[in-house]
Length: 117
Length: 425
Image 1 (tube, rainbow over the protein chains, first blue to last red):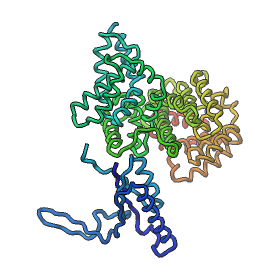
Image 2: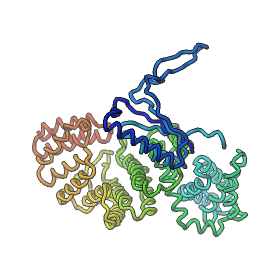
Image 3: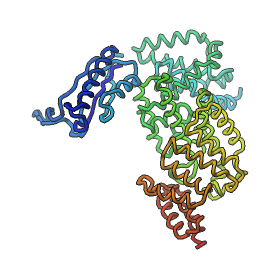
Image 4: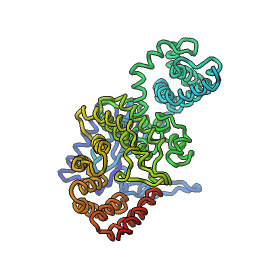
């Protein structure tokens, strides 16, 4: 089954990239991604720029509206995602619980809709 | 065969065999709860007509399994496009033989470990941590206990629509999110089993001390939890905490008749007529606890059961070895430093040593924000103040306990104690 692992976190809670902790976490992200890729279960995975770079688009009454910022202003922002193909939810939850930022962030595990029966 | 006899036989089969038939059927259907439940209902409908006419089958479970499987094939055929599952089922059905009679194969399966595994699969899936807790509870009671949706609703004092909604949401999530229908692998087993035991104990405590409403206990829920506890103990005989939980529930339930007075008022341990304790429940509980202790892997349920066992063996409150109770609570508190356990430890220390010792512990606990409205703490403080002779202090503590309680029976009981204490002033 396909699942997305949506990675949320409060950017202010993350260690500074320049600090030793930040560098260690970076290493951790790379090794996590490598492990996932080598398992053959990773279909995609990207890190996203922070929420303030986001543009939210709506069309209302034929008019296109652009808003600066993410869809929802929350402390915990979507920071990236993985798309994985694993046998069941337990396997997806296991990958989620190993996410490098899991100690201060959260991972939302969402099954992907399959349109084939 | 009279219609009455076959009706009774079917009712018994629904209650006793239904959950295991369902458990196996879900596996054959690749984890499809809804289809399995529908097919089993179809099979019951066939039985209502067939059993009075043809006689009650020798092995009702095997008959229901076979009939439900056929009904599932019919339903899959009607919905088309699911040919792979139809083929799987037809392969199984081919082994059944042509008539709706139990084949030697089914008789064999009935006694084999396959059935055991299916029921464990069902338990672990119903109690999966990815499901919301009310959904886990409803699904467990409904699928394994064999309570109807209406009975489940009555037991938990919620509307039938609410239970229906919880069940629906849980089953949808199991299907859409890919919750596996299996006994968890070794690395997940300890954590998941803890979750299963937690759900069963929640069902018991909800029945034992109804958290709201007019009755102090709902015995149907207690009986259901004990039935599940016995089933788990039979399926996992080498797990000490599973046996410990069963012992704890049996020893607690043994006091049920003595806990409520003639007017529905609650009676605490000190005031209970111990001759009204259920000796058979106590015996079964002590046997389960012995079995647990022999496995030499102590845990919180076993410790709580051991405390209940000390009370069960003691002829009266005065003759209770309170130092032993306090030591068990201290060990429990070391493993589970919850405020609730701390209150019980303080009470036991108050009996084992001097009320003042318990009171000092309680006063310190009372400063915890989460315990400001905790009824047992205020009730225990009131009792202990009364024993030290501080009747005015006791009166204030009783008033506080009454104010915090949402259970009518408990409030009435506290009010009675308060009046008794204030008459001593």
